Image 1 (cartoon, rainbow, N blue to C red):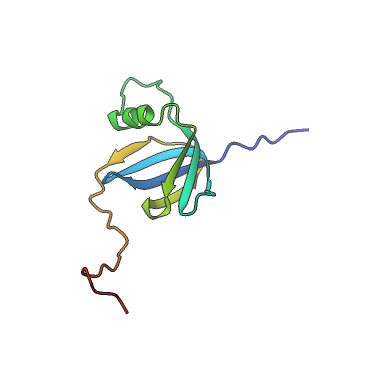
Image 2 (image 1 turned 120 degrees about the vertical axis):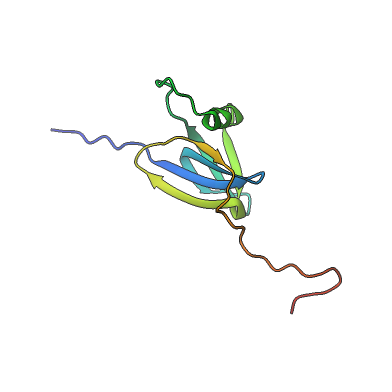
Length: 112
């Protein structure tokens, strides 16, 4: 009798942070009890078996080192994908990302 071992779910989360686009991988992603936030737990980073080291992945690894859970504002989320395996976490400048449009009224005026 063959047993089927279900692999862990892996999610790729892409979000804006400090004007840059972060792309990270995690095993847990869900809506937070804190209204307006998505929670990310169990970050996954690639193993360092290769000689070439990606500096942006190393920066993310250092930034999230020791982080048990991260709360990301919903409006910062660009995309969440369930993937078969983790990839390389990275930071990019987000040149092709546009913010969600908002209506801003001049001071003293209200939108109707």
